[in-house]
Length: 354
Image (cartoon, rainbow, N blue to C red):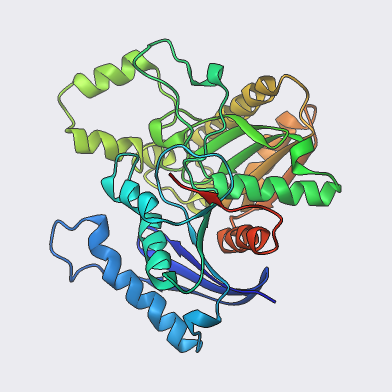
């Protein structure tokens, strides 16, 4: 039996877990108060607070680092990578701290894992959001200076792809699947025999609009919006990621609240909710065409996939295309444990970041 510590650092919390192989022993979520930090504070100023939480968790459960077989953290925003399990090394951390490729608290989780594991146990990360398997033609836009980038919920996409394959008694590498992660942002990906050859990037506004992301916009109108002088650059960034989608239209990013308003007869809320579903369906159709063949399956995952009301809106327009499967939520702790176990069981070689 292998014992693993799993770290998943989010915006204001850190989720921790102890696994024996892929069986959960304990999990806990630590909510952080950053009010003691100087204002403004950087992402990396959170390190001590988050590391203290991890150490408290280990002490609470009487876990000695030396008793672990591996520490696995959700991955940082670094340079484009092939899918797989990576050893966390200094080069990866240096690239994460440079912020060249983005900024996300997961990078702190990786640094904590690396520091705790140093010279004791291996530290890994699995399918970070910068996984890039896109084919060349998928990158090209109508402007040479701008290329489409691969940045999405790769950990969850790959995990549910493998889960579907297991249910179908087939190999993920033999399936052609369209997977859509439904959350605050939406990503739709074409999984061609184990490779994500194309995927939308909700962070950059290249996707169906989501609960708080603007999604793809008419470029000329967005340009005029940006040049109007009504918004500063930081305002535009907030609108793009966090202030768009359902939040912009309805003042909330809670699907539960939106559905309650619809049940109470709010026709405007129903229209906007239907429009989000409409854009997702169009994105799935495009992703299916990118495969060049009829998909073996269409998969919905993420928090919004918990809503039967919403997923039924999607299924009614997609049942003709391929069987629809729903894996609601995103069990990232388990996905990280499974990745770590593939390396520990020698089913997969750990990749070296360089």
